[in-house]
Length: 416
Image (cartoon, rainbow, N blue to C red; front, side, top):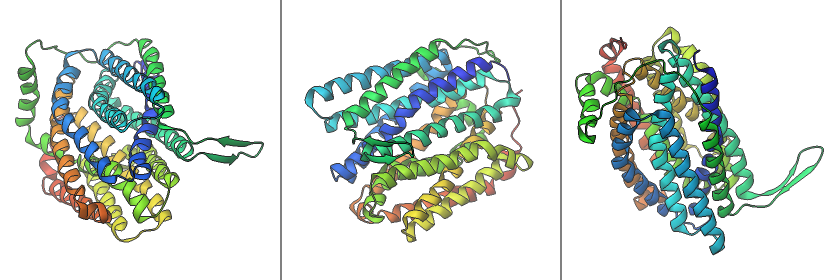
């Protein structure tokens, strides 16, 4: 594989910044549900963050295709460092992290993700040859989810604190305040900046940079998909598991854990750990397992699995079952993402990958906003298990539509 040193440094930088991002994205929603007892407020903040990404996402996609992916990756970490370190200073001065600070940081993290991951995959596409697209997407998934396992375990410890018997000695950890969590996040963003500066590489593909205006650049991506409707169809349908998991993780899960399972922060953090273990398994084995079939078949199977798990969540309220099945949710989401991205990288040129990705994201954002609005209705706040039932049907609808359009999608040509 070409550019191995650059790939290693890219993964190191992504791991450092992703570690405390994972802690923050667990800690902030749990803080609203457990400390403030405001599950609806958490849903409203997530809705607002998703709404902003609807406008930011298309612009982010044009930036990914116009500028150096390394520069974009660097600047997102600089912005994250400045925001989180400034917020930590302000929070320490006040003696606590105000709600508006936490809401702003949660929103900022989502907006950073909107450009971080498109630039990450576009950067990876530049670093390796087409024959290695499956490998690089799997490696990214394993790296990202391994980081999630560690950050999820740390979140469980930091949110609750306590005494931990490690055999040779006992470790007594005080419960962390949100101000300390914010400071940790800012420091890791800052550390990532220095690692990214060390990356040096030679692109494996040449890009024709377009210098026209924003609307014209965006139209190029739109026209590419309009002329290839089955790429658009596959990109949208294969995103369904991702949409439902984002919404359930940030809107439904904190409320479900506290008020349905009657559990504490440890269970909430551990559900992310089990999810991450499933995602790691997907990164290691999914492409190998479905190599004898096809990416479409794999995505269909994983949508069925995720829908079945959601159905079980709707009727069976046991903590061990919830945690064990989160492994399958992680497997389904990460597996479908690896297969989906590999499929699209093989069929969409590097010069438009950012803009086509932003179109998929717009559609996915609209789907998530609809679900957030629905699940914020008092009925679903009080009966959160029914939100999982709806998500089950959405996964199966996507599965059915992929099945109906299997042949034309499977016959889509590869990049020349």
